[in-house]
Image (tube, rainbow, N blue to C red; front, top):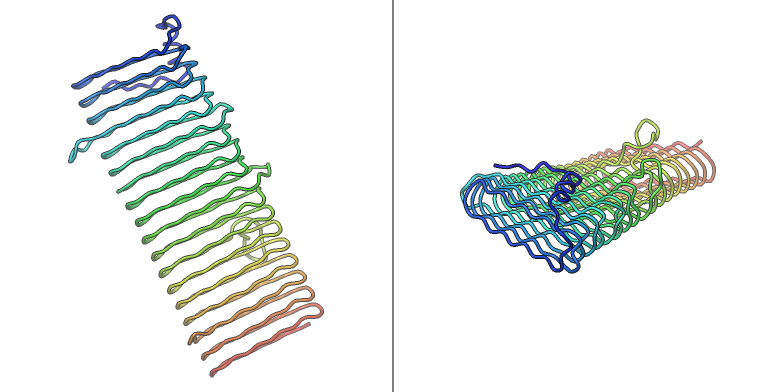
Length: 452
């Protein structure tokens, strides 16, 4: 089987060697049946819209189509069989489209590969559809342009899809994968107002989305299955970018999700999981961020730390004006949150058994609240600065609960309420104009307040 390894530049040189005079509304139709066939078509600078249609039936076939300086033109490639290759390239133009489809016969283990490149294009589309097993799909769009769309659809097992958009504005990436160990990767960099959507159904799927040096962009990952990994990276690497949104929705068992927003401002991250044994991580640095994390199930973990040092821990939100909203419904859940700088807020709610929350805030005007219902729950707040507020409540027939609140600074408030048995509450405050209230109902409770 012939494997096309030509880069877009090399293919352009090959095209120039075999080009013809300018044509109007050029159409190239190629149909091949059998094994080991090669189809190649080149079009350049047509007056009207041009079309390349390549259809191959069989195994070990290869199709190559290229269009240069075209507008409103189309490359359409269809392969039915196994061990086939598709390659499409469009350079310098507008309103062009690439459509690549590969289908494998049922109950046949075959590997098909397809690639498309659109360089210096405006308002173009690239669509890859693969039905079968062990597929690979790659599409790239780059070159200071706008309004481009990339779509990859894969159904079957063992699929791999990757898309790349650089120096794009108002562009979009969509990846849909179903059934089996699929991997999806999307990269958007040096652009504004771009969107990426990844949907995966099946088991052991991985989805990685990178939106770097972006402003006003959105990323959404939806996974339905087990042992899935979702990661969204929106970073500025030394330059502050603003207004990006990262969202992850997972259902199943043993899933892991991560949202990373560094050196940015006014960005938001939302992670939601419905399942068991899931892990969620949020890392944010900059100003004006918000994070919302929720999980439904058993043995879930929420971890927000890793950016700046707060006491003995590392903070998941660094900067000013941050908000973290957390909620878990299930058993044996764990939350770890740290915030640094000023104007941070935390709201948490846990309903289940054996839940643990540890929250650290360092700076001014911090607010921490909570609610924990269940058994064997532990809540700890650490606040340092001025104008801090902490409020906790553990009830709903809870027992063996522990609350510890530490506040340093001025004008701090602490409220603790526990209903049950074997509860322990401790509040330490340092500064002026502080207030501490502890109310415990049950037996074997211990309360300790220190103000200095």
